[in-house]
Image 1 (tube, rainbow, N blue to C red):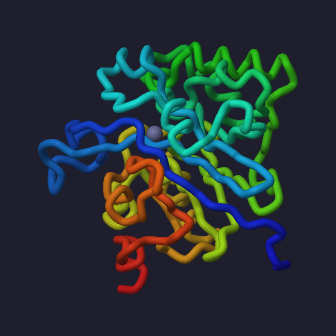
Image 2: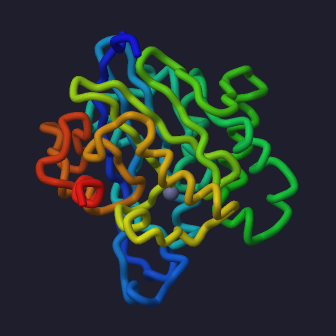
Length: 276
Ligand SMILES: [Zn+2]
């Protein structure tokens, strides 16, 4: 492979955190998962001196309240805390359209959204006529994406694509109609934001699927795929694990933001697991 043309810093911005029942998170429960389990809600920022890309936009008050979720701060305030303003953001990668990833689209009237064709087909099509399948989606978020498309501000991807120099997206099935992981070139090597291809470290280590499933074989294949994108296991980051907030250094300007591109401060569960 050629030398990367651009390197980036990558940040995880925490905006929500709560205890929920383990049964919500593991297909094979209760054993060994009983009782409360912490989940953290993040959005991510990819930045260098030429560009700022936001990955996912979190839930908004309305869609979070409707599900009893605890928002610690507005995702937009989280962006501001590390100096990102709406005007800085030309590109927003939406890993998938679930309510906790796709809110706030209307707050970026000039940005282009990068999404998988399969995800938009899924969340605008027949599956949404079934309550259990639309449960994870918010119709206003989907409507905002349709409006963006009618303004030619949606960049559809079908599969894998380098969307900007050093930033690529990779289709991973299973959890939604067309989830995508994001691979970014950093000074320490490629980094993979798995998003909900892996909610937690132990999702993959225990091979215990998250409970929201579109296709189980595809979901399991996604656990391999996130490690096949060329990143060292310490630079593969799960989507909702509270451990991420303990393993990576904090941003100097904001203690709820982690600097993922500096690498973990100590061995991550995936590093230990891959070594074993
Ligand atoms: Zn999620």
